[in-house]
Image 1 (cartoon, rainbow, N blue to C red):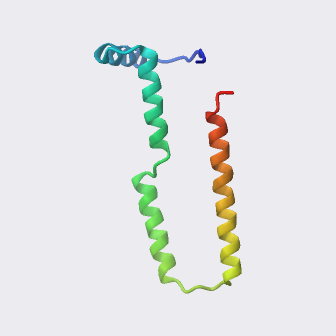
Image 2: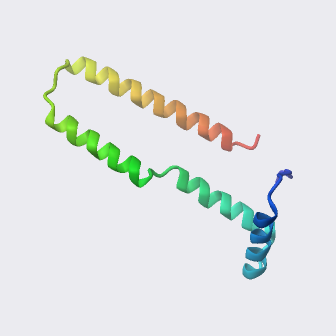
Image 3: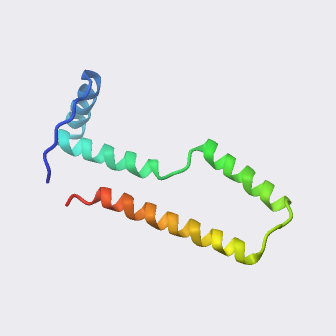
Length: 97
């Protein structure tokens, strides 16, 4: 396990200590759990993002298709590659080595 140093405001430190005491867990455990929960939430879409994406999908569904199948497949390949690269970058940041 790595030891790290962060600067936190007094109110945050009080919250960590209070939660640790209430839960009967070490402060470091409370911080690890909080970071894990925060990390899990950051992968989810906000309500505004979800609604915007649904609007785009509804608009696309109503528009006629004006490009070739090859063009659409090339775009899909590009999106998949981009997602794969993003996933690899994210997992490399998670790697403690």
